[in-house]
Image (cartoon, rainbow, N blue to C red; front, top):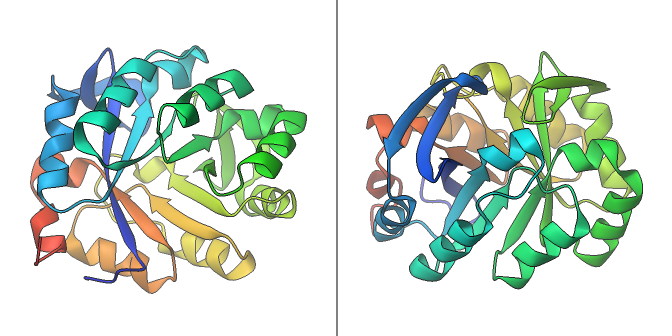
Length: 241
């Protein structure tokens, strides 16, 4: 599993300043795992991680930045490359994050709703922006996964690629937080039918699940609940850490 070209992103989902996980994106099904996100991020760094995936769940639902200061503090305290998303729907919010040292910002709802903005962003920051494609039954969801967009995930990915996107994060919502295995068929299709670097998310529960994603040709995988529940140890992912 020690493939330098395949990145494992441990995940921290922020809600009310705490590390949580949602079940299938449902804000009514929240599990709190830690009340100190910085300490959690430091533990990931100490286990060998180079990247960290952070989601501002408050902003994802409301569209109002809620955890910018905390995300910046995590980045500065750990030295990790931070990839963050959740409610980034204005150019000002995006540029505030990028200026604070965030390595990559993830845009989902804005990519669906605000085509002029996303065109501008992809021209200006092609290597520092990823498009978040969160899908339920193959349809892209928006507004913190609370509404469908009517857009097929593959078609949307191809549209974003045509606009200049280089990286996408694909999440199968039905599998998120369930530890039932990744949606490898959908991941494989996106890898094969686009030229995008794809980071897969949702359903990871074991080392075998991580390997299954790697075998699709994906560029990386996000691992959340499996780490918190102890079924995946980051130190085992990087034996020399």
